[in-house]
Image (cartoon, rainbow, N blue to C red; front, side, top):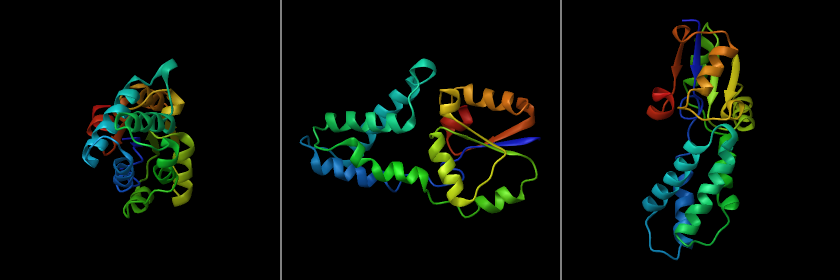
Length: 183
């Protein structure tokens, strides 16, 4: 093996799972349609996923924009007062300052081959989080670089080409069965 491709959120640093229920509760409190927080979360995830999978090439939209657009659709669906950009501030702030898994730095320091970060989150957010935790990598490729999201092949193919590697030279480590394993 010549290199490691490493997902970032959910693998090196924590996802935003503890922030999302707070947003669901705020939407529920403002909703004029009777609903549970689980229904809000399910609807938001479905709206986000549809936008996410349609976002590539000339139709590419950043995660920050997709997140706000899908939350706006969720607010409308549940007839909830609120402004998506304001409700979503904590989640977007988290992407820049996530908690790190305690074994991430020791793992990165123990690896003697290049590690490349491959992330669906926007470039500025990934780089801010890396800087916050003193994480260095041989390279970083995000969805913005390739105008598509994992599991689509563009990010993986770009990383292989950019770093002069073949599929047999690398292992990809990630937390998502869809984005990482399927990709």
